[in-house]
Image (spheres, helix red, strand yellow):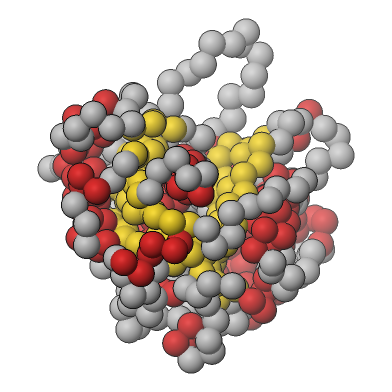
Length: 400
């Protein structure tokens, strides 16, 4: 896989993000307005300065009218996009390409989801027409297959694997407790995590990400114009998206210890950005920790650990807030929450804070403030093991 990329052609000049959680008193419109106006204020612009909008939501609205009606946009293009749990990232990717193409000077990418008062448990989604023979596994059931497969392949006993999963959940709750926008803002002990009721397989309650409401937005412009609006923009270094053949569930060679789509996506992103040693060069990563074993597998697919060694890195604290490579410093899906259409942009919002040295003091990454690292990575996946889409971005605070 190869793509030319748009390294250093597009900049983020403003971002906004609502609190994520159970917003019984807020509508989709309310959250869109809050995120959009926070982004306008951040960039120092007015809504009329924008040329076009890309709007991501999985199931909380249809068409661009949902955004234009809420924001009272005067006759400008609004494109509604959807790509499963990578929907927010897909809105950002398309908006960035539109600027890089020269079609527009300044655009917005915005995402939203309202999951808590729609009468459903879990993620939204209308059933698609089919012949009735497709898999009916729930998301927890599908992702629960990762942990035992990983343990069997690499010789990790079941109790130790449970410790690894709990350590990931503990880390993300620790980070979320230091994030005033997170859905869950309390630390949770290892013992409580390990003794929680089971949901599917070895997945307990604390191994599953939160279902929440929320919205996030980004303002993008040409890189050469960025300093007209802010002294410290972020520059897009890489945008990669892959969709696989979805053959995993019927492929006898697929062993549930990797996401092939993620490995391909990450390799493409690193090539676009010129990153040759991601663990050493990247300051922080926001990854799609929909379930704790997902984050473990992603550490290896993204090149942050050698194959079969990710579990040891987790236990060693490599991905902790004060570790060698902090992962999900804002709490991740696990603690910040997962309003699907907003999650990818929320990840970029953490890069926006961290790489510009504006994160809360007790969450600010030292490799940025003291170590001089300038790159952040975000990652989304949508679907299930063996049949998913994957997104990866790399952004940086410096050109070059």
